[in-house]
Image (cartoon, rainbow, N blue to C red; front, side):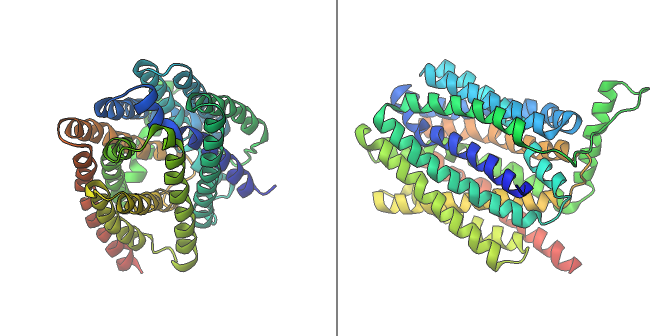
Length: 399
């Protein structure tokens, strides 16, 4: 099997299983656990605090002990987190599970991209990351169908528990099937302490970013995307349930449709980008984020269900364009040695943004309206357009 196919299979399988939970967690949190808007955002903040605290140490694990081990640990912990929240539908258990989920994700974040970039020796990363994003969207689509079927036959709670069990099994499956032949371990000299060596590794990653103006711009954009994403991620489901009064009996099918159409649209858009645009990624991101602003505002303030539905699908599709293109631009500019640590720094910046933005937007939604909370996230997207223009000018100057 080609190394790319292994990458597609593992990442899409994990996306499928995680999406089984994500399709239903808005229903589970609001209806089963009875969380209010502030609690909805707080569980996201807890997750991002865990990401912020653990990104750097887990990135170092991937650079010192191997990407494969890091991916195994991360997938295993995420499986345990979903088991915990599925067994106990309460704020305390969901909060703990969110912290565990954040910890688990930090073992995956950076390590996965570093693994495939190492194995391919930096070749054809744009094609691999774009196709990988399409396969993940396809996996999520099937995850939606599977979650709706299981929830219909049993319950939302049972679906989450099954997904947790399967994620644990996937962790072991990946451990025994993933090759790791091009990993460059960061070794330390005998006369240098472990702590000093870790600090040196972190400094090396920071120097890679600081020494490249494009990476600095990407770092700032990463923070802004983090500021904008947490409020939208946690409130859009509550917006549909509470503002449009979706019946509880029909909510499973509606949320399945919300996600399914968004992911199918995302596959189409990424395929279009892959075929029609030749590495002109700042321009693509400028257009997509400009349109995203209008879509999010329309979604937040629309009183018409059909318009809200269409603009949600547009916003969801456009938001998912950011990650694969940012990954391509970042990985193309990083050295193989210490790559996971440098990528973890970007994950940490995203976490900082989400930690800062989540509670602010949650409080705003709690004391005003959910729609106002969603609309306020646009404030953080506007500066992104400025930095994308700067990045494109930088590219034009070197072309």
